[in-house]
Length: 250
Ligand code: NAP
Image (cartoon, rainbow, N blue to C red; front, side, top):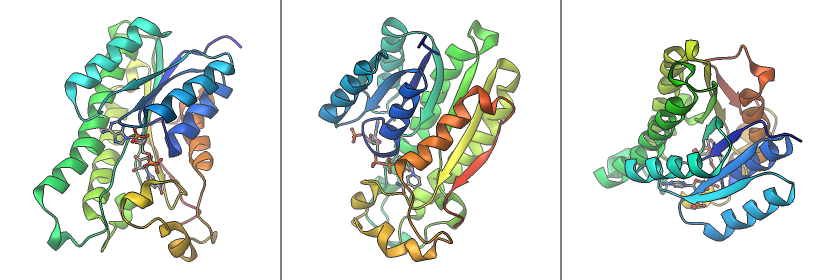
């Protein structure tokens, strides 16, 4: 299959990002797998994608670092077909805690990775894809969260607030670049089976809370990736500025 262009998936080494990488390669895109620490997982995913006949590279870069994001995009410019899209997926959360016990380091790190990281990666993608700057257009999908509207009381209000910022960025940027051939949307997953819950000290979080989901179960990374890949695709050519819940109705 001829390449449909390159998609950068930040945090593509594991979880929802890795599921996006697999579906994008299946659909004929070349994929850049960004990661922070999991070099072995990213390298093995690259091997899987090249085995499917797609171009794929893994790039270690902290999305919250301006210099590292700039260098990552320069490497993409050198090594890959033109950028057609960005999945702003890299995200973190800290241990479950009450807001009264937060310190500035925790709050700032959550915002640095989840918010600044998404802004920096979007900035570089817009500079390359904008038809006003010589690009071919493209699409950006931001990973927000149902936490943005629930607020995550007693767990991680800092994380919920970072996703509220992603929603606002999605709405603003979707209007800012709509006439430059770029669509910007967000997916807001609910309780999804990935390792992120272990980082909040609650590896069984989905099982414990799934009764709150009208559908009575947690979702899979692939069910989220299906929505992301649809929003990136030409099938969503008139969908812009949408915050799409993938939550089983929660
Ligand atoms: P995950 O399994 O914990 O994976 C997180 C990914 O982000 C990993 O690939 C990780 O790389 C990468 N990452 C972390 N910090 C990074 C940094 N500073 N720079 C670059 N990459 C970094 O998470 P997930 O559950 O798949 O979540 C993916 C996205 O969906 C996140 O934005 C999350 O907030 C959102 N989301 C998830 C859920 C859920 O229930 N799972 C619900 C709502 C929203 P390494 O492998 O190198 O560490």
